[in-house]
Image (cartoon, rainbow, N blue to C red; front, side, top):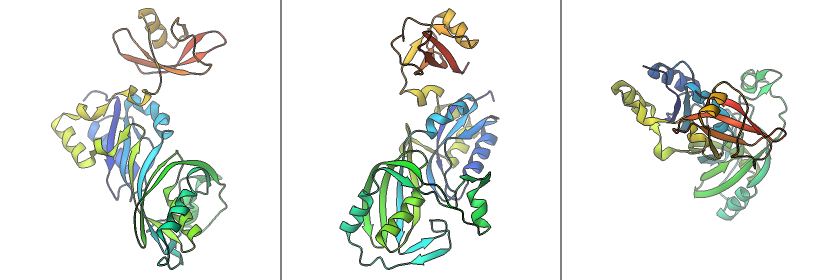
Length: 298
């Protein structure tokens, strides 16, 4: 099988780490360079874009894109991990919670907020992942991080379970959101279930399961499910270069273009050949009016 360069919109199964999923796709595809665009906890399911070949160089565009989740939060029990797998740290009675109280509480988390990440996370403290310290029974202070909740919709409330849909910025921990809601409402809470519905342009409705992916690789029609490299760059304007411009791009030389001189300093654009091939990601230097190839994909 020849090298594969593109992105697979994979629906991660429950019970697998993101690392194991990547290892499985690497074995199925035969492609050495395989990565993903943002870790999902083992028990979380949903959209996990898998990057193959040169697409691994575009990971940051997906990591930085907004995410959408559907979450189930159970009130009445707080845990060490902020999810159902953790040891109980506190209990409360959620039976008196009203829909109005819950709506008011979730609305208070909309917009830019400071969020303290859980101890059971991959964030590093003095070079060690926090979850290593947590497993050793060590808790350390964590600095709050600014995240943004763009949208928080209440889907259902059947005490003690709250179902919500959240659209948020990168770095948002839905486990922390569940824990903080429980603290605010005074009865404790933890994340009972989580599905990632969307990452950037990739939606769960158009994803493929790992079982289905195994089948398409076995039967040789995997190309249908590999999205092109430039699909995650559609928010950037495009520039078409002639043969001389293509040669400059391929060899990493800056080029001056009549098209694009109105760009802002540091602006990025997609570069295509005259026959429509995606060549590179360019960045504009307003000081000398040139476009520098930042990432070349040919």
